[in-house]
Length: 363
Image (cartoon, rainbow, N blue to C red):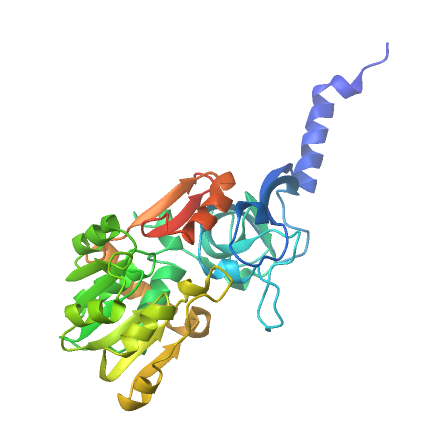
């Protein structure tokens, strides 16, 4: 009598061993960039698709395979969706969107990473990512801190706030500080840093609800820029003696008004230009740059990627702030990878409070 080997336990064990040797394959949902944009970012510029991925790194490689847990929604992602001649990275149509996130290592060919490690760094907007550049990942120890914090206050967002305010603007106790987009991911951290340095700080926000929020975070004052449309007059009311430090997240007419109200030897950290994010350059231009000369004002733009050597210092300081309760962190976490396109679009319409992130999966 012939034995049906294909139905035997031995056959099933044999197939199981082969699958483990080859690497198990699983479905992998992804957010795909559809094509270069102009004007407003729309959900249709991104698409949710499903592919498959092998849960094992290629033999002999130093790649790291991760399961993505949290993704960070950041304004710079829109800039990577525009076609331009500028020599800066751009997403390619049909590719997976990439950004900062928190992930868990599934398999690794790199000696610095093991299965089960928690990491943060560049990853894909997908359920699983094969990262060929292990140097873009950094191992983290949560130690009771929510993992989502590593997309924000303990990630690129917090690092940006720290660099622009602490390192570039070199604040002194008693100085007058203004923060635009104060309820945003970076802005609400900068305001708290200013208070920790003994400064007087005022923020501008896009709604009364956001004004109330930043005041609860410790800002001395805040105003709704949609109601107070004469920015020069408004700033003179809140800063009768002028502004020493301006942390700029918006540019445009607000920056122009700030230049009229800066004190001598003032410093401006140019972090973002939200006023231009509709792609049409409708910020009206800057007309008061002569004040930079008259008042010896320093304006400096910066990219956090140029200051990575300061990352250990930042992590030590901010981890202490968070653990000791000196830094209140506001986050807006959306559920599911499918929510990422609408979350990113909503970011430019001010639909978030604090840091916007997407939870892809549990640990």
